[in-house]
Length: 415
Picture 1 (cartoon, rainbow, N blue to C red):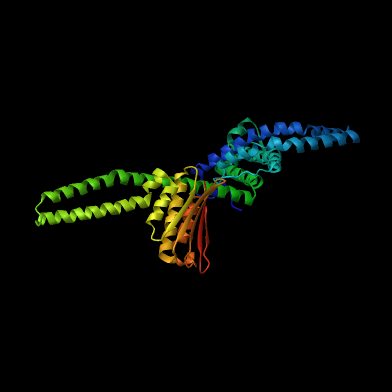
Picture 2 (cartoon, rainbow, N blue to C red):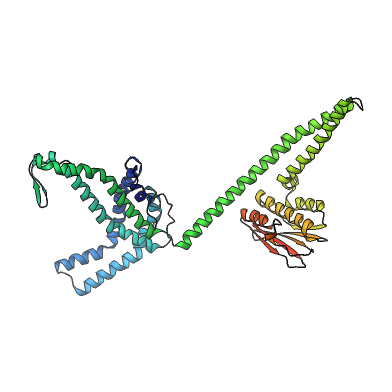
């Protein structure tokens, strides 16, 4: 079991000059009003039991009345007690950050919170009372030379009557004052450990909560990457590409103004050809980052354009009634692009089909070819990268490729 952070910090040399003693003090002090707030309604619910105890103590209890009081207290506490304790999970989730840096996923069980409420109004006050007694005793010892002037001080079997007799106790008290922050840390740490053990969700629920947070974080990262990709594509298209087009035109005009076979014409001609090649490469780069057609007309049109450029004849069947999110469209487009590249390179297929369907918030994309089959992600054909791209968008990639074909790649994305 991992100890609360305040207990781990208490074992370090720099504990006294760190923020942990103050955090432990804040946790301990905030427990007192919280325990009083919880004790008030629980005390009302337990009133029949309190009356029963008083009657038993005075000998005034009657069997029938005692039974009714016992049943009434049990019904009130079991019926309304969990409702009273319900807010404790959220409150302690915030308060525990003072004693422990680890986040707490509160259990949704009302009985766990009710059990913790009972601990908070019974065992916790007892332990805190022991802490107060210990601190008071240390304080009395530390200031005993001053207090003894008002009268003798009794320490159980020993009574101090003079300042000289109080000096050893004062030295011990001053040393003990240095240990008060550690007492606070131990008390706060023990309380935090009990609270975490009682209030935290079971392993499965906590793991599910962590997985949900990981999925949300991954979705936020994917959205950020897609936004950055669009920004780079826009900057290249509107900035570098336009300047390169202007440079190419200027080189072409300069080439026309120079004599044909002159050294300058040859140099300008070479530069002109290189500029055109660079412009073509930049256009391909921009297309690879995010095709302009995908941004302007959507996924079906971009896939049809991709099919026209494929070395293998490709038929596209798309049935979408709306535009999807940029991340979903980009993921589907690049998965299909890589899949068609694999078809052309590895399958020996004569044709392929791309199907696009949306139903019940799920986008399904299938790429089917009539090639030789036998596709294996372990052989490095890019299938693992496709699966990773799908997972980044909270989707999945399915593969069916028996020897002899056909090969079916199915992409499923929530949309």
